[in-house]
Amino acid sequence: MKKPNMLDAKKRHQNKINYTKYNEVTEKFGEGKKFFVRTYGCQMNEHDSEKIRGMLLSAGFVPCDDIVDADIIILNTCAIRENAHDKVFGFLGVLKHMKQSKKDLIVGITGCMSQEEVVVNEILNKYKQVDFVIGTHNLDNLLSVLKEKMDTNKRQIEVLSYEGDVVENIPVLRESKYSAWVDIIYGCDKFCTYCIVPYTRGTQRSRRHEDIVSEVEELVKNGYKEVTLLGQNVNAYGKDLYSDYTLANLLKDVADTGIERLRFVTSHPWDFTSEMVDVIAANKNIMPYIHLPLQSGSNKILKLMNRRYTKEEYLKLYKEIRDKVENSSITTDIIVGFPGETEEDFLDTLDVVNKCKFDGAFTFAFSPRENTPAARMTDAIDEDVKMDRLHRLNEVVNKYSNEANSKMLGTIVKCLVTSLSDKDKSKVCGYTENMKLVNIKGDASLIGKIVDVKITDTKSFSLDGEYVESK
Ligand code: SAM
Ligand code: SF4
Image 1 (cartoon, rainbow, N blue to C red):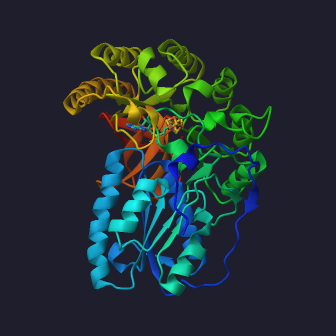
Image 2 (image 1 turned 120 degrees about the vertical axis):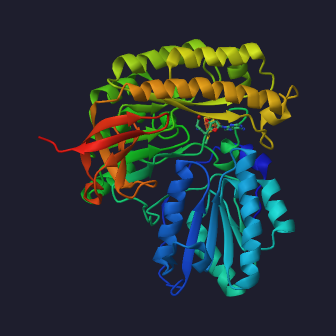
Image 3 (image 1 turned 180 degrees about the vertical axis):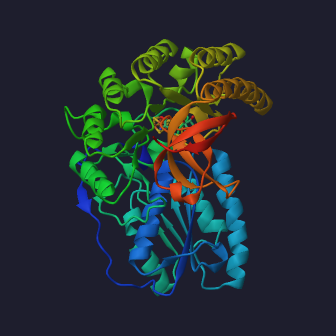
């Protein structure tokens, strides 16, 4: 049994990162068995779930749409806020009942929660329905851990507290045939004081640029229209690996593969250089959409958060992007109720929101995470004050996203149509270049194409439109 240790997870080992290839499993020990993967959290977790599905498929397991048909259920978890934990522990209650009526059912936990010492101890003591736990650093061992569980019927806990290798060629079962996620950097060394990611995902490790470019070339060959480069902080790409090859170089090289749409997420304002802005502005296939987390507009709070930029520096970068990148959309993340946040600090945040008029924002109430410095800060904010600020912030944020969307009314925009609309099966949905979701009057034959769409109505979180035949 290998359990996590949060103190070890904090250390940054100077050892060189190993670049290895996935150890293919040839035995089809999953034949006749079905699996179901449930994902919590960010795009990186969504993409890890695609790897989990790919590995399971390679051993003969097959996916199922209904969880009740599954022989293996994997919860790929998120630890970013307490409510992410609560959802997983709540669902483990449901799985306990399922296991009572299906004795052979195997339940596994992967993702960020498995890297938390307190979670693994709780699972060991209270959640007997969990058959295996694998950490984020050795996800590529999934099949051997699962096979060991199936062969011995013993519980498996395999979590490393130090950063793993960069493993290439892990099988992937992608959710979409048109839009793909591609990892470029794992882990994070920023240590924002509220954030658990540097502990659960380990040190910053960039993939080699040749491996990234050849993965994208393969996707282009297979008909993919869009690629999103992924990392907790993509702007730090290359810092651990090269002296002079940065995200700007990578964006240019990936854009040159001919992929029709290139996106990237998430950007830390601290590492965002003018050179990067110039590359985005100069390449028409790099989409004019940037997610630029602000977190707070108060310099005092930004310092306590260890964000390494000031309100003024953020505003300067914001203006540079807006000035140089045509038709850009910028969204953000904001936390309210960080320890010590006064009404004046909160008004500073509202001031930045009023100046930037973001296209959209993900807003959060501060949630203390175990072992992070912010969880030890003393001047916590009352829950009702946090909720009041969140409510006031959301009103302003929604006003501006409504305004940004309204400006698109009547325009004709390019949309990549990705699927049938969830709400109305007589419609399809897709994304504009600046990442607005559009419900489109049109049939399923449009799926997978980039088409012209006339915007007919706008709301806070989505647009309505109709397909226009290109002349
Ligand atoms: N790496 C990205 C960055 O630097 O902004 C985002 C990481 S995190 C998955 C997404 C968002 O969750 C963060 O931008 C932050 O706003 C929020 N978040 C992280 N830790 C939090 C906490 N302890 N409480 C509330 N929100 C948190
Ligand atoms: Fe967390 Fe900060 Fe790293 Fe983003 S940059 S993952 S918020 S520590």
